[in-house]
Image (tube, rainbow, N blue to C red):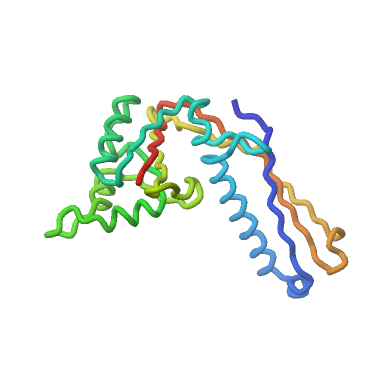
Length: 216
């Protein structure tokens, strides 16, 4: 169940010089920066949250808790490797085809696949073959951990919305609370703004998610 147990805080310090230039443009810039920071951290926590120190348990650290299958690719990323994973995924949760499967990748995987020519005559790459078959491929440098090891390897994540039900949910409670603090840094005339939001995540159907590990 979703529970309001985690609070995320984003803090911005505005200098006295910036305050002297106050106006609608400055306010909008502050709003954009704080919203972007909240969005970035919410995405990271959803997938990589540790489940400790105030963070929700993300999908990847929580694969055992959420009943998510993980499969090692242990090879370079090719359409053949992903196709085999998609077949296993479809067979296990009744997705009706590769177009119904969403894939989350690191940009380094795109870089490798786009440089891997499958057909020299036509110039078709492994990335072209992947995106032709799968309609939803998203790249992220935030929701999946940086490549590590030797050879460098990372993870990929597959999801589907079987029967129209999302595989996981992110819950937030109420509006963003904003705390204005002109006192802590008053000696230098700076203003501290803190934005707080309460969130949690839960996996509705672990069978609709599969983690692919050791994508080299």
